[in-house]
Image (cartoon, rainbow, N blue to C red; front, top):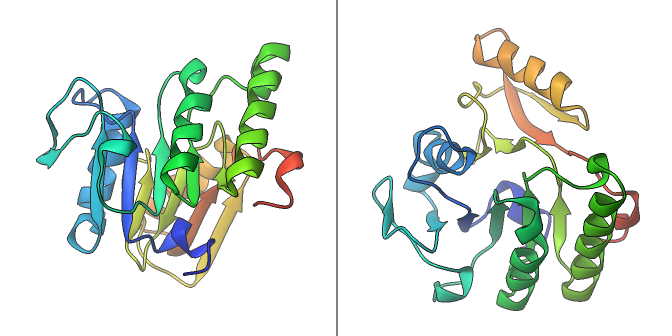
Length: 199
């Protein structure tokens, strides 16, 4: 499978930071994977060190505790923990990751240093990365909703990609209202310029 395909048609998805609390983004991502239809065709692995089950799926303390291969990791944890989580994904052999967590370049010098650490990890492990600080990825045909959007838009012929979270949210709102069909939706987040060779 070409590595970019693991963003849109993964055989399995791990949600690092999956939550049992409905007001958390980690809950929303798992819920969208289920309600968007992905859980019927692919494997969902909630990653949470303190939960045994999330939305009916067995939870795991770490991706290293999952015996199967994982194609895509969605990371939704506090920013100080993201580099170690991404490094663990690399060691596990996960080819693609989406970092929804904020707190990087937009947060000043310390955030930029954390972002550069993510870049270094991606180069070291040949990881493909979308984010950080993004809404996630949706493919309405797979179907895959690896985002914290309010739902899954109807399928359509147009794909949409945006660095702007505000613009992305506006387009999703239009689509969810039934006025626009999307094949794919990609929120790039910060989109580090340094990742040209791995994105």
